[in-house]
Length: 144
Image 1 (cartoon, rainbow, N blue to C red):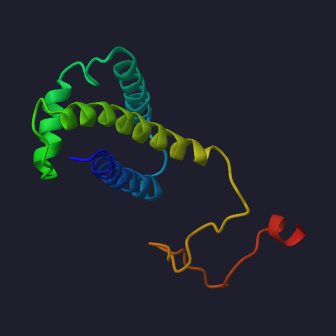
Image 2: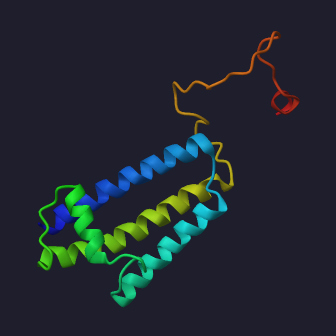
């Protein structure tokens, strides 16, 4: 595999995972304490693995992860090849970047940005509140 193909495969995989996680957060809210700790640990594991050359996770080797990834994405990676070594190195970076992106997205909910639309255009509420009086304006909205 070429270097650009390795990066593209990892980018696609983790971009899809990030999109799924963002959708879950949009539906359910911010990360809970356990998920937050898991992603923080993920960043730490990846950083440590990059610095030391060790495995990302203590319970599974990078060889095993890379083989499983290659098989599930039908990538032509031969164990022990230069491309395989490069893939394992880039996998660490991609995983760390993914965890950091999830944490950054969660952190983005820490405040409100009023320069953006609250909901994407065309969004409907799942269970709109019914009111016999029609739309109501809050006193804050009226006086602002």
